[in-house]
Image: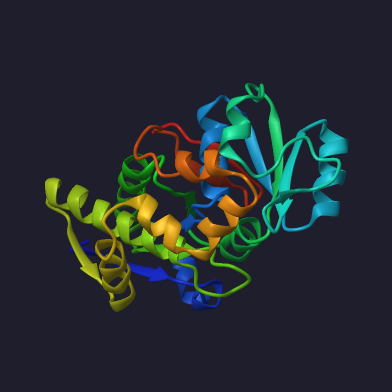
Amino acid sequence: MDEVKLRVAFTPPDFHAKWNELICVVVDVLRASSTIVTLLENGCQQVYTLASASDSRALSRKQDYILAGERNGLTLPGFDMGNSPCEVLINDVAEKGVVLTTTNGTRVIKKVSGARKVLIGCFLNAQACCERALLLAREYKTGIGIICAAEKNAFVLDDAFCAGFLVEEILQIAGLNSINIELLDSAQAARRIYHGYPDILSAFRASNSGQRLLSIGREDDFRFCSNVDIFTSVPVLYQNSYFWCESL
């Protein structure tokens, strides 16, 4: 394989059938991606991501899993926790299963679940995720697609900015390992968005998602999600069903 083609879907409708041949990285940086990564980093055995709140409740009851989720940023009634990495840190999730449902991220995961491999990426695990995506792309002799969860199928700045950061990270890792990367137009655009802001918090603050998070009193998550490479866990979708951390 001479080079790895890298592309970005800024909204879920940009993902179509040919993307199923790719190694796909789902980005919902505020907050589903960050929550899933934090869960697995803190010893959670597996994370089931479901689009429906009722299906999530049913699976949680059946398997005695922790029930987590939100709609429009707010914790769903009767759930054990919201879609919050900071809540994960203060709850005992080690050796347990978690069912997670969110407004955008878990719906997008279902949409892309037929891809060669589906990974979860964010700032928290950026380097580890990009290294794994490149390894898998070369193993499967295919390209990489970064899919932004967006908001109800509409473009959001925070995901696009994070996608651009991951593009930059992939380029740096590839350069160190003599891997040729072809940036398709969408990846070039994401990279430019990333370079358009002085830092992560500035991009978050400029985004509607970031403003909403602050408006509901979750500055803790707002700031925590901006941490870079503090975790090494890379969630991988298994049997189109749940995320876990595969051994390298």
